[in-house]
Image 1 (cartoon, rainbow, N blue to C red):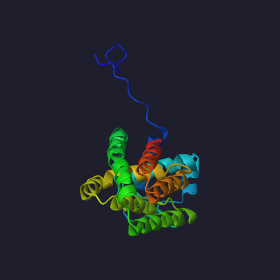
Image 2: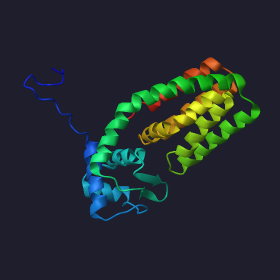
Image 3: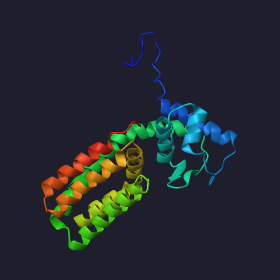
Image 4: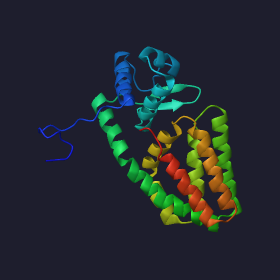
Length: 231
């Protein structure tokens, strides 16, 4: 008999996480309000008050929906509905996301640590300019109140380009959609955008110093941080 039973033939059912219950309520609201693709959800503060939860707790639920592509959170605009899924499909996809996170992080660690190491060995002045531009983009986004997702994506692309390894770069492109999941989930954590930017700067400094060991170590520390999410 499987070890997760209670000895009487019953299988223990995992308790839904709070953000999963809030996701259900949000989807219920979307349906009852008749919202469709392109429609804007109420402001975070209003939603939190209606649901009787803190904005931090609600934010985690919105991040979960953003990870799955149900909403698109745009700075200065708010959360825009992309499509209306069923509650069952969203909860299933959330649990699948949670189950595959360790494998995505493992793949990122395997590829990106090596890319950072190679970038420190092979980078050109043009490569460094691309990395710096990505850092500036992310810093500007964060200063404007955004999470810095565009700058984050540009930074990792710039590091991959600086490695001058077409095969590794192709492999990163192949898993790019899975990487997006980890990016959105990570940058949605409180205080994470600024920490991520500082982590990027440490990687960039090691690449600029032509120190492969330090670049690999900094990238591994960054990916370990990305893995620390509540989802």
